[in-house]
Image (cartoon, rainbow, N blue to C red; front, side):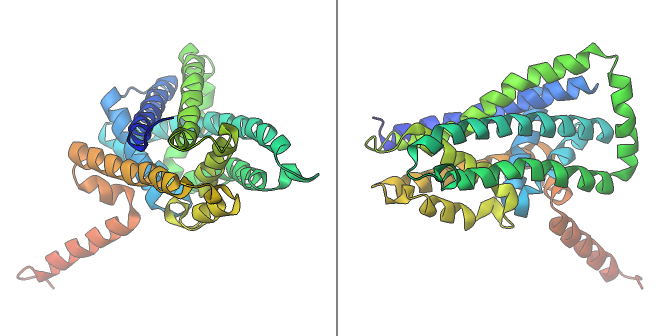
Length: 300
């Protein structure tokens, strides 16, 4: 049994493991499409993308944020889009497989003939639907948002079919994606080790899966409201001390992730990167620029 401080400290290490695994995966997928990026740039892009995902509804801000950082590191937009598209496909496939595995582990422990579809398995099924939703939503949005660059992107598969680095990059990214998913799903069970052993790790991992990957279906930043409802609806909140563990989990997955991502991006790329990634900030910056120009002497 761990102390709360030890559990939180190890949880912070898991956050860094997840960040490192996904940064290396981004490097591997960029190499697969013919682009190079240093480890520092990949870490900044990944951390900033995480922060933007947390701060935006349906987690839609992650892709523009990472593309903004990749642009600062001179990665061509078409190659950046290609790498992120490959990342989406491979990562969501692994997430779906993990979701099915967790559902089979949790369902036999739930009472009643319809146990497979009861909470938390119902929440788990909704989160698994988010996998398909992410793919269906992301590609039309990317094609409409970056129409000129996706013309090059559509020609990319024909060129890469003959390139052995393409398949090597994908193969290298798969175990890194597995490490990332395991790190994310291990955080809540790890924090719960500071409590008496009242809950099975598969149940906590299933809850972590639902409230982590199901946020893409929720129109509030970080799934605010829906995540708390899922936590309460599964009955886990009734476990003594579990509410404080959930608060610690939220602090790590929201507070630490946002603070780290924004700090790294601003230190490495300047404050302008925030406007490049968040459209409301970009519009506000444009209005301020126009206002300053109109205040100059001789302006009409």
